[in-house]
Amino acid sequence: MFTAPKLRERLVETVDQGRYRIIVNLQGVSFMDSTGLGTLVGGLKRVKEHEGILSLVCSSRPVLRVLSITGLNNVFPIHESVEQAIASS
Amino acid sequence: MARMFAGSVARHYGADEDVVEDVKVAVSEACTNSVKAHHDSGTPEPIELRAREQNGDLTFEVVDSGKGIDTELQDAVQQGAATPAAGLYEGSLGLTLIRSLFPRAEILRNEDRGTTVRFVVPVEGSQEDVEVPPLG
Image (cartoon, rainbow over all chains, first blue to last red; front, side, top):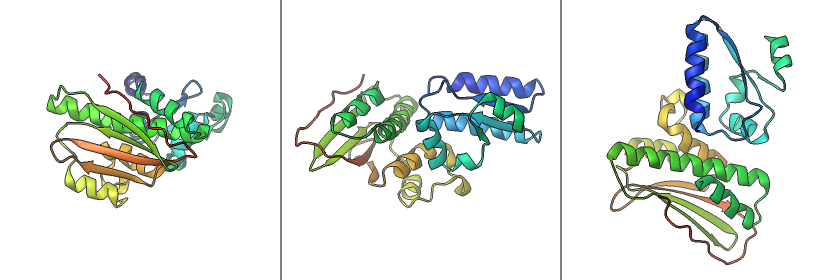
């Protein structure tokens, strides 16, 4: 909730720099609510405008649960490690 | 802080860790909406977080004195129709999330002013009540 604005800023910046294939590493995130989800969805919309991709690295149960309950696990490719995310993108 | 406290209360009444995490998310969502409502309407009063256990039902309430939920949105959330497809994604995702986590959730317009979000968590608790002081 507190880090969402920073993430939003970073995503906007990255897309503005012309980088549209983004991996968001959520391994250090233990809690996420709709503010964080909204930020990720916002980032996804931005990269999609450029036919890009936004994938997540996440293995935290609470975060995965929120992604799953909102159906966003079907919207974002989710990987267990950054290496795996890079390999499949 | 509200979510930590709510999580501790749920844990105290025997909720397992997955449920404790769900409680934290639900309380966080409700409080975020309330804080926004107070901010938007310039309401200086505190927001209240209440928890009460009775007969194995742990009930949480987040009570604000903001401008109150829009009736159309309230109906949509109650009927489970506040979905991204319905164009009600923005601002209603939190309420939808609460209802997804805890089906026994209600969003009520207070008689005087503001909104109460109430949800019930089944626990194997005692009869002891826990009253949480208003959050500043």
